[in-house]
Structures are given as structure tokens and as C-alpha cells.
Amino acid sequence: MNRYLIRNATAIMTGQSGDKARSPVSDIRIENGVITEMGTGLRPAPAEQQLDADGCVIYPGFVNTHHHLFQSLLKGIPSGIHLTLSPWLQAVPFSYRRGFDEKRLRIAARIGLVELMRSGCTTVADHHYLFQPGQDFDAAAILFEEARTLGMRFMLLRGGATVTRKLEEHERLQQATETLDQMLASVQATASHFHQNGPLAMSKVAVAPTSVHVSLPTQELKEVARAARSMGLRLHSHMSESVAYIEHCRERFDCLPIEYLARNEWLGPDVWLAHLVHLSPAEIRMLSETRTGLAHCPQSNARLADGIAPATMLARMGAPVGMGVDGAASNEAADMISELHFAWLLHRAQAGTLARARPEGHGEEGGDATTVEQIIHWASQSGAQMLGFDGVGHLAPGMAADLAVYALDDPRYFGLHDLAIGPIVSGGRPPIKWLLCNGKIILENDKPMGLDLRLLGLQAKNEVQALLTL
Image (cartoon, rainbow, N blue to C red; front, side):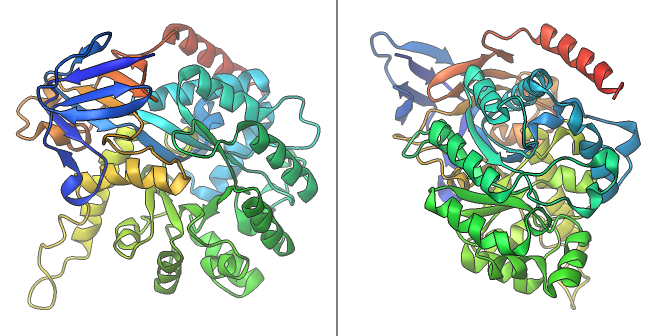
């Protein structure tokens, strides 16, 4: 059994909020996958491997609450690089999804998971929606297997649709849809095999129609929500990413998107939604009052010119907020550190745009609208709670030993007065000395255990070339 004593850390950020965000100690003892003790000057125990974290800072393993791993082979596609959401969907994921067989999906998932690992991520919720009748491979099993091989916690957000949306009407973009019975039977089979309850679970499943306002007819929304809850599964979907969501819901349902979800039992503490950029004050209140969560994807929302989600306001009003990297095809990377750095700057900039000259306004107030500690909290404890991973997400005795030891020995970090915040405020990607998940070292000196990164790079290059022939 793996037993570790991590000693001499310069700083430890716990992932908790408020006064508990920073730990005053320097050592962490780990046994049986769990943190058993935190202190300073802890004495080594027999058969305990010591890890010297001198000069390093320790963070909780990050929790990515919304991703699309298959898009790891669709970065920087020229035809979509300057497009907004709707035409981008047609030019990139809808155009290339037919090219993802078992082999290609496996390689894409491996690339995305490794990239996330190397930025300190230990838990990934992947919104996979490439499911159709007659598929000759089990996409869910492939994703769980790749995460398990790398030693990461994984949650499948089981996407899909029972209707063809308007954006997919062109013959080249169409994909066969499932019936509702097929979708729910598949979810139940996947959940019975992979979904784990209780503390320290390594794998989970959620029911996640791709964009619920267009992926299901109205009469199926309540049935899907009730089926998910009867199976003990959470609910997830894209929502209010662009103004097109508002236009569609007004035209078809004579209401706003969040109002539509409320009518159909799609709000609550067991629901979290990706993006939520365009919300009315009334919708923000509805989300907060029902404790419906946000998977905040700021880089993707900026890249696709969607806008900025009101994450800070939702958090202040009591709605859970987690961080999501989204797909690499709308992000050109899958890096939690860059996502958090961008989020920290973005919300400070947003506060500045709202500043007004005195006496009418508040001058330059608002620079602390989002603190580093809050960003880390969103990306760890808050995200884990939102996904339902009990005992995971922050650093304290009794919690899962999911953590990253960052070595801040690059000139980028020289001169920092507060090394604890370096990984977030200085940008870039600090090298990881050790990444642990469930108390096991899964990455050491930036290298995943047992994986040839050079070979993975060659495989990626070959698959990109093959996709260009589609």
C-alpha cells in the first residue's frame, strides 16, 4: 500500500474558501489513498516514502467539470478559428465527428487527459455526445478505461440527442439520433457498470443531453430528468452559451432558457450547466435559489465570442460554481492552469468595465471581485461537490489524497513575494514534481507514469493527417 510523507512545502493551498483557503503547515501524510495528517515537522513512519517539497507549493488536484475529450484532435482548425458558436459547431465538431472510430477516440481521450494531468487536474467530467444507434464500439467504456489507465477520477457526462437540430440539417453534418428508450437503456447499462457511490469514488455517470433545449423534444425533458433521478444520477447540459439560446427559447417556448428548464424539472442541486453566459437577473435568481451549478468555461466563451458568464454574481448569491476547460477545439488547449489564470484576470477586468467615476459610482473598487483563493476553490472543492464526488476536492485530514506539487524553480516565478499564488497569477504552466490521485503518484517530473509522450505525439500527428482526408 502506498504511504507517503510530503515534507517541507513552501505553501499549501487547500481548495477551501475563506480563512481555510491556506494551510499554515508544510507536511502532508498519506495512507490508503487518504490524507491522514497535516502538520509541520512530521516525523517519518516506517515503510513511508518521503517526498521533499522544498521550494514547492501544493494545491488540491483540480476538478474539470466540463470537457469534450474527443476534440483533442481538433485544435486550431483553420475553417473554424475565427467563427462564433453556431457556425463553429458546423465547421468543426459536426464536420469531423464522423471520423471518430474506436482508435481515434482512444488517442484523443489520452491526449486530453494527459494535458489536463500536466496542469494539475485529477478529476475530469467529460461531456461525450458521439452516440448513435448501431455504433460498433463502446465509447463510454473507452473513456473510462483511458482515465483508469492514467489513474484519474472520471465522470462520463453521457450526451446525445433524440432529435436532429437545425444546425445539423445539412446532409454532410447529420448523425443518426437515438430513440429515448435507446438513450435511457444505454445510460442505465453504463451506470450499472461504472457509476460508484460513496466517498472516494473513482468513476461516475451523469445524464447529459447535449443541449437540452434542442436535443430533446419538450415532452421528453421531464421523463429524462425523472429517469436520471430514479437511477441516482445527476443532470448536465450546455445552456445559455450564446444569444441563440435565448432566441430559440423565445421563438419556440415563449420564455427564457432557464425558465424553460424550470418548467421541465431541470433545475436543482443535482443539476449543473455549462457556460451560462447570457442570463437575465430573474434567471440568476432562479439558478441561485435552486442551487443549480455553473461549469464556468471562460477561455472557450472568449474564444467563441460568447461573452462572460456572471460567475462571481452566481457565487455570491449561493449558486455552486466549478471550472470547465471545455473542448480543445474551442480552446486550442486543455490546460486547467491557463483556464484559472484567465478567469482570475477576466473577472478583474470585468469589474473594471463596471467602474464609474465618483461620486456617482465606486471609482476603482472591484479589483478583488475574484480572488486567487476563490478561483482555486471553484476548481477544486466546489467542483467536486457539484459533481457529487464525496471526500474529494480539498486538502484536509480524512480527504482523498488528490494533490499537485508544483516546482516554482523557473525564472517566471523568481521574485514572487507570495509563492503560494504563483501557479495562478504568473501564468504559464509550472512543472509538476508529483501529481497524486487517490494517494498514488500518477505523474512525476511532468511525465505520466508508464506513458511514452513522444509516441503519443506521433500518433496525434498521424490522426490529424488522416482527419484532413475526410
